[in-house]
Image 1: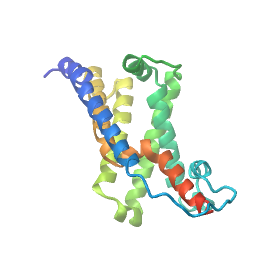
Image 2: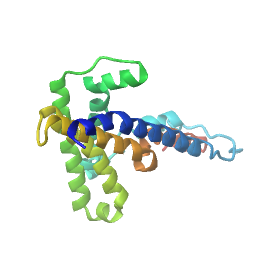
Image 3: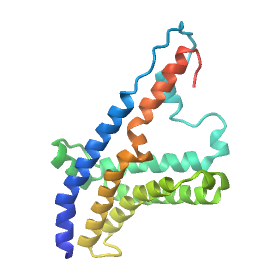
Image 4: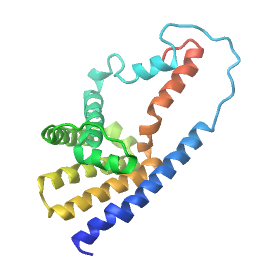
Length: 219
């Protein structure tokens, strides 16, 4: 298979398969999570300021008091790469064109120079977080294969995309195909790994805040 055939496959059949698995997987996991239900809490609610689902969603978005000082790499590095990844995915002009072709909607993009710089910063943050996980004995002990695997699934699309835009390492056609393939692997595995927290993070925070808020506990 030559470069053009490889690119044609990943932009056609490969992309369709990845999107299909992604959509079915996400819907299945969401159905699985939200169909669990829970027994109604018949106790009288205990009112307390700040004890609610929405308060928890907001509060958990920022580090708890003292935690930023204790684990700066976790919070700062994690915050940078999450925010950077979201901006690169949704505000890079070629990505917006792809969303438009798939969904029929479009929105303004950011300057390519800014996205390029942000990609480098995001890659650096991911590397710093990885090194911290390797060097910290507790984090390293708690880490499983899935943690390393999902890190690679997140890192490679950013790296290959940046290399493709910069025309580095491999011919542009080949690197673009590799980039698209890494994105497709991310889509395929996302619903079935810890990366699925992208769809459950705010719902789970709201749920925990609501349950504990009913007891008068602010979490």
